[in-house]
Amino acid sequence: MTATIHKIGGHQSPSLDPILKLVAPGMNKVNAVILDRMQSQIPLIPELAGHLIAGGGKRMRPMLTLACAQLLDYPGERHHKLAAAVEFIHTATLLHDDVVDGSDMRRGKTAANLIFGNPAAVLVGDFLFSRSFELMVEDGSLKVLKILSNASAVIAEGEVNQLTAQRQISTTEEKYLEIIGSKTAALFAAACRISAVVAESGEAQEMALDAYGRNLGIAFQLVDDAIDYVSDGATMGKDSGDDFRDGKVTLPVILAHCRGNQEEQKFWRDAMLGNRVSNDDLAHACNLLRAHRAIDDTLDRARHYGQRAIDAIAHFSAGDAKSALTEAVEFAIARAY
Image 1: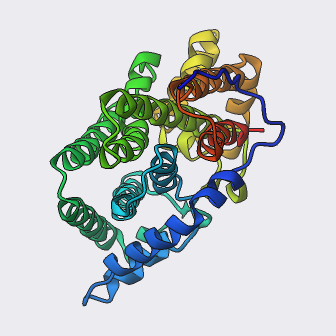
Image 2: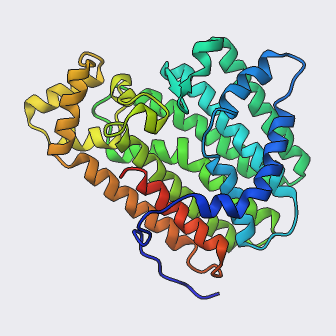
């Protein structure tokens, strides 16, 4: 293998179409597993799970599992069930997150907990977690089980860490990166790494794909946190300004607060404590973010981590899979523009 250098920004209009086309046959099999394993004799379970699972979403994480398997020329079938397990873990965390956050929208639809109630959303999330572990056990690899179960634990730790940091304007950039590295990047990393395990590709390639997924996950979350202030509900599939009203101290807020004068810092303290949550307050917050280049610098950091993701797969052989994985990183960042 020879390394190839790809600088981020190489695609004028990056798209998920290459990776969608690459994994389409495999995703049909993954979706069949998802549909089969979300069934239950309790009608509420498939009804609630289906509301979210069938409600859109890019299925980015299972697509990464399949694309990484193709990058390694893996000819088998094991990764289909494991990709479904990854999606179940992700869906379970979304159900739990919406209860914790009190979200009104998810993937452009009314959040499941508002339709079915918080207890049902939490319990169906637990059901999906259980299904994911059934799929891992059926695969039979203790290493895969270790990677995905560890990722599940790390995600939960990240969510608790974020909860303790909520409304704490003193949250540092280091703490913020630790949180998103756990709650978002851990599953991206695991979704990619397990492909190298089933392909028996060796430790070096495992860790290269882990690094690709981890850095992509961080970039993905940085962009999400930036566009919460500059996009709209129709584009994001959730309400604009949710993070602001929930008192989530994300990187744009951290940067604007650090760079602001005393009056501006007081505004951010009050806002994160929940005392400045009107539409006018949100508009003022957006003005401050622009004035201090907080959004621009957050996106610069996203590009940095995106470049690290692309660099992590530089030594893999050129081909459709590598090109699609590279463009997926470009797309994740271009969502902000």
